[in-house]
Length: 77
Length: 428
Image (cartoon, chains in turn orange, green):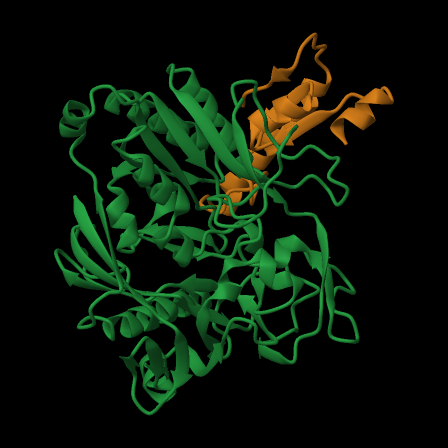
């Protein structure tokens, strides 16, 4: 899906826990997620702290969309 | 560590007033089993039923399959840390009731439990159709969480397998197999010219009802470590997972791991089989990195020349598999990986979610997406309520005439990644 959307000219950020798979399938912009069962959440944290984590991932992803890349790039949090 | 496995061949299983083994016939007292299982307050009821090879019987949803064993000499008891006290097992003598198993089934725990057909085309896909199965149809008390239910069903299966195994304590085995693993420093002196080979045993440990236990420890919390293969034959590793039925390792698979058996058969002749490294398959990337780093480091520290790596389950564990393979290869150690495939119903899609050029020697247990039509069976043990919902089933899988059209993913053990099945794919 990442590749097909990008093929139509729309930049894509892949938020993904297992970064190596994202690299293998060929995503260009990758933002690491928390865990496979809860990519954007963390049940070990309080609701407030979980919100901060989620906000951070989304902000990082939006920022990644604005950056030109010439090769597969992982935007570490 | 040296273990003598005494196999008592079970030729039939019958319900009886007294549990005993007479001339290879396992007599099972259903009331005695019921009494043991119902000591667990989480279980409302249990029904005991027998399924024999070639019976027109379907068992579903299958949770675990366990071979009855008993420790007759040496440290500890079967399934240490789980249903018996923590004690290092893998030495002495163990008796095995060969040819039979305990099968736990009943209302679904998760959504990835399987089918065992005792005859017909489906029977060819599961090794458990060839066994005399003592089936426990478990009914949990109301409002029990899936986790508590899984735990209760798992402990019931292991306890009853050990109860039946105990009946073989005083019986002279039909066949005795001897397995021994020496300290590595000793075995390299004994076989200086043979390549040193280890087995990297990946355990499914993703949580959410996908877990495996080592001496009772939740394996998603372990750091990769070394085991003597004989410990595994005494039940050091038990299954607690409901991953797709076709490629989960039941406790029976762990006890009878064919990779370990084959490595032992070549030990001292073609190779020096030095031991087993167990590792996990977790849901955090950092854990995957740590575990694969440690696996590669252990391989290097014990100084092996080659390893076999087996996977359990599919999807993101493909990454654990490839990480292990890559990092071990980068240490200059040869690897062969054992996996299965999800290549679509036409077999044309990418088989694994991850790949690397260093994974250049692969054995496959087959394509789990292959569709099969299972004929109606005369008898059902368990319930057909979940056939459309289990992994590999789809809306309409269960047909009105009682037949089932589904992917072979639904069959317990169909594409097993230890090679405990008949399927494979070869390139010519």
